[in-house]
Image 1 (cartoon, helix red, strand yellow):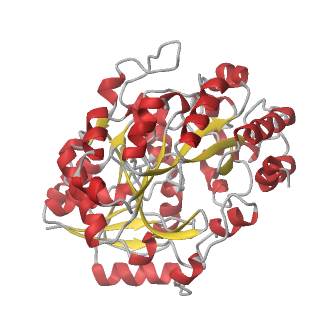
Image 2 (tube, one colour):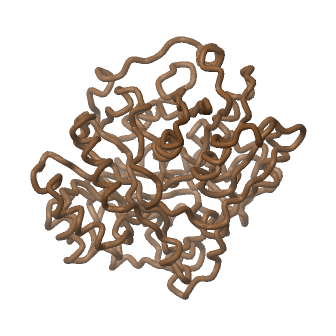
Amino acid sequence: MTRILLINPSKWGRGITPIWIASHAALLQEGKHEVRLFDSTFYKDWSECELEFNTSNSQYKPSLIDKYIKWNTLNILEELQNYILKFNPEIIFWSAISSHIHGEGEYINFLNGYELINKVKHNAILVTSGLIPTADPIRTSQEFKRCDYIIAGESEEFLRKIADNIENWPKKEGCPEIIKQSEPIKLSEIPPYEYSLFDDQIFYRPYNGDVLKSVDIELSRGCPFSCGYCVETVIQRNYGFTEKNTSGIIKNSNSYLRSKSFENLISELETLYYDFGIRFFRFQDTNFLTADRKLLKNLSNSDLFKKNKDIKLYIETRPETINKSSVELLEQLNVDGVGMGIEISSDSFKNNHLDRFCDTQAIKLAFKLLKEKNIKRTSYNVIGFPNQTEDDIKSTINFNAELNPDNITVAFYSPYIGTNVGDQGFNQKQFKYLKGYVDGQLSTAQLENNSEDFLPNELLYYYKKNFTSLVRGK
């Protein structure tokens, strides 16, 4: 038995249950290893208070979430050091890939975790993965030398192998050893995910002004689309899926998409519903409706969904996957809300600059069909793309006003390493300065970059702060 400490280095300061923690813990516990979690979420001296910022700019409705949260006022580094001394882990692991890649800070987890672990003493071997190591494992090993093993790709299986044979995995001197997961893991072979490591308060989160007991979960991984700015393409490339058709869909996408078994998925859901009291399931699948359709239909016909109408789901999908048939399926699954990427309203900009082929008519139809079924609609918007103008932002605001979403989010564009768009506008010397993501206020594209291809930070900040109110005409 090996002792493994997982670290959740989130700075968001709100309820998130990182899926990678649940998946890695499940496989490690199946191997009879001892797994613990140090969660940084609610440390006052660490959190960036994302909820406060996005409530003030009207992206989130005010709620009573503070009544459910007890903030830790102790020093996070001292707490982590004491935890390590007491548990004496043989492995420390802090960042990974799951379907949680587009939100809640999974991209920055590698850097946040390294910041923490670099300031404490331990005798463990340091193993890590995630989007940054997968995008550029060589430079990651050169810049972050205190790591021992860096896994490019999904890391559940390799972490289990290391734990199973810890004596064969010594600490490294100099640069870390790079391990490459060369093909997508078989999601159906991972046992039901383990959520018992999380503290109870992590399950509470605001939703449309209420506070619900919620969990982040996945039933599939992978996306068939290859948008030029998206971190999904980093994972696709790692597994050799680089060819695509004229619609931006990767070739042989069926070999890239993978789903859980129905038995494991329903076991997870039932445990979370009956044992944890979860009523709101936040599915983080990149494109929920491109998951195995038979799996979705079996789920909708299960006793869990037929007998318990208090279950709510929130999913994300592409607008063009919404049609009359799929909306009926979402209704059967008690889907309360759907998030869809608008990004920018201009079809020509999306096609020519972003390799995203989803026209405005498909978006309008999706919002209309969901509205007819009383399913809430969230629009995801991005500002600060290279070559995006202020008129583009204004046009996107007007398009949102026409769609009239129930919820609106807007994010700064960030040039993810390894993406086509990111590498075009990204100074390669910035690799070691990626911590600029942490403040959440400024576009990383502007970090040490004075290119005229980008709008000024002050202008971007103004539109992020006022985007929702401008859409609503307030």
